[in-house]
Length: 237
Image (tube, rainbow, N blue to C red):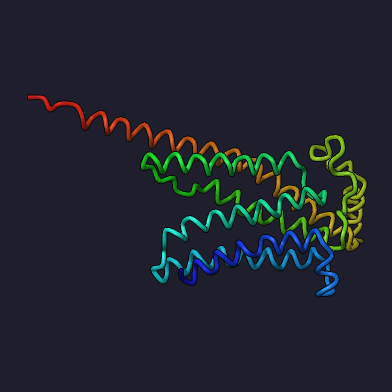
């Protein structure tokens, strides 16, 4: 155990606290603040540990097998818990979260298969973009709903994601924007749109990054197969 690994474990411990903050009145009773506000603080602290543990492990030469094992698990637990709670709070569509989490299962299984064949699948750029988009989506949606309710009432009904400009609150917010008379709720609506946009980007990047990982795996496997075949061929006299 070392400091980077302790930070990773701390991120794992934040996960149940995040769920409790969002799904129970503990924050109101104990701290006198909205559960959304406490959840935002916890999520940002956990995200900070994600940056710090990797930096400290490299700078202090403390990269360990345990850390390599725990770090991706901590990331997936944190993001998965937050996304599932967003569905419970009607802040995110379930189909989007299913796609994102399904991708995580597939990539995790692919990494296990690759490791058994001696192939190391490094993080792809598309996967990193997906992770940042997820973080933006989670924070933006929680901020937008910090008062206790989603600022947009009928997301989740017929094709709102494709025709969001027809939603009453969105139309009112853009109308107030043109007249330079924005209200606090209008800012929440725009924040909500940013969160939903980042969530849609997360879905797109989840599919793209899954394709990247699969392509990398099959290319590496093909190269290993060719190398093995070349090694067993008898030398020409």
